Image 1 (cartoon, helix red, strand yellow):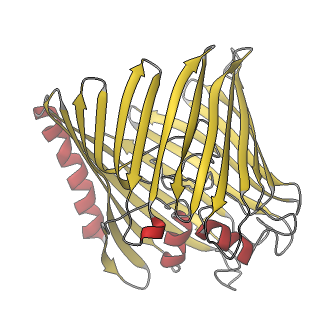
Image 2 (image 1 turned 180 degrees about the vertical axis):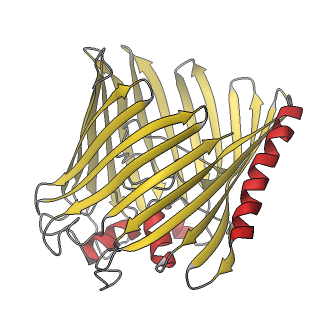
Length: 387
């Protein structure tokens, strides 16, 4: 294991002189992150009540090639080492929002032992082609259609989860995407993410326009076995951010359910002159339960790509720069129906240029069977070196 860790460190630092020698038309960067943690798995994964010492080592390399002004190629590789007694449960928990539509299987386990798992994934592999105001993207990419900072109902291709603690970059999808720009802040866009099973294909289009200093988005298409229509906006009120998203889904044939349902999220945020930051959001899921939302309901919701199993979820966040190099942040999700909650305090300090350390926790509370009551807690440190 020591040899393996040394090999990773050498490979990362060896890339630095390569980057210095390159230049146009190439660029190379990435980061190395080490995350030791004390972790208690969720009760529906294991009956073990003991906390475990775990660790995730992640290295990421981002490569860009600009052969001409009309073409850009991107390749991003992510490798992780999971260490501990419950490595497969940790991997599953860490990838809670890896729900992107992937046609190709570019995930490889290099080593699988009782307490060590080494995994690599091609996270991005795309080609961008430019024809005047038209841009076409081919390959594994991030298609972000949402406007909110936490929950994005209209993010059809790459839904994410705010409790995802390992993926700084949101999941990618294997897709073909075309964007035609009508102006600096307006465009028409279409995207198709094909799947081996026809019912799993995602295909949609949107119109984005800018009026009255707001971005307005109208979209429609199909996602899996549903026809979807959406609307979103992003702007400001009294110098504070104001965003919202609405998505109406009509199942074509899903559990004999012929009725449509609405998922909506509205949020606002404000930063004061002293760097004090406030952020609040509400998520409404018409198909969500008003009973206890844990256990099977929660697993089923994530399997269906839903953002929450609950009818309503509330988000609150406060952050501030405590010193020029130290920032504190605390965020909370609350389910008002089963009274369960999730709390995430964290403090990030810049040790030196390009090296940050973060102390953070994922703390869950509630009765057994509630959305967050059965979930295990995680306490961790993160050391991240960017290059």
